Length: 401
Image (cartoon, rainbow, N blue to C red; front, side, top):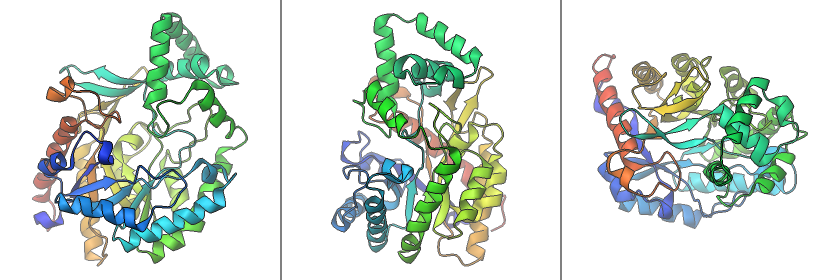
């Protein structure tokens, strides 16, 4: 398999506020970037001029804007309340503008109220590096004692409630405040200044929305925007829930293979596809990571590669990219086979781009301020990119050319 047939190497950039510069990304060897117009409020349209300006900034740095990550979906759209119709029209306009500018992949998620969450941002690994970790007991304490969600005690397993109560009782007043600020400030989809009361108010908007209604809202959104995406040559890729199970009593509808199958079948458009995230999906033991690539490879439009380590106590943490529970060699081999299949079919979109996700904080990055978005240190992701680069080059010699 020739190098030109390999997966495109990409890196995530958070724009001007990102401490990882475009020059640094270029030096990782990545050629493409997943980024967004973070300055545009959620629900508003992305101006064509702003898209072109961002694309050209990347081009001048020797990089290609491969995917818009993400074009966010507003809470109004997810709940179909308030100004949701205007937001949908703005979304269609943004898709058309991205297509005009040559950006053909758009990532988004349909996680209610919150984006991905963790309870620890500096879990110490044996080698001294720091990793992200999710602890269901600590998150239950956040739910019970920081947010004080109505009905939380009855909705959580009683053993978890008891363990969360012990954890909370063992914290001093200062440590309780520190823990609350850490978890509240971690939500990538929320403002760092969000208070427990504000989050509780957002949760109230979903009180009457079941998982079935949430699925119906997603299908209605896709039916409204997929035609605009298809006409603009844009492929939309939904990101799985992270973690892939309910939190804070919220419905999660992109967590399992069955969820993905339902979404892809509900709107059978080439513009309705998947962002394959091996880490998000891998936090559930019942998700067959390699099989999902084999079964849904023709609808995968973007790839996030990382591995998590699921632990007996119910926690999981970000593992090194070639360790943990994900069989990364088998995953990459399956992606390369799918890519070759798509090329043989004559698909213009045959080549996929991946980015290494959620790297550890290690080496000199341990001496620097934490990145604005946890999990996005430079050197940890560089290590992951280098490991996967070597992996796919090695595998390419074992696969048919």
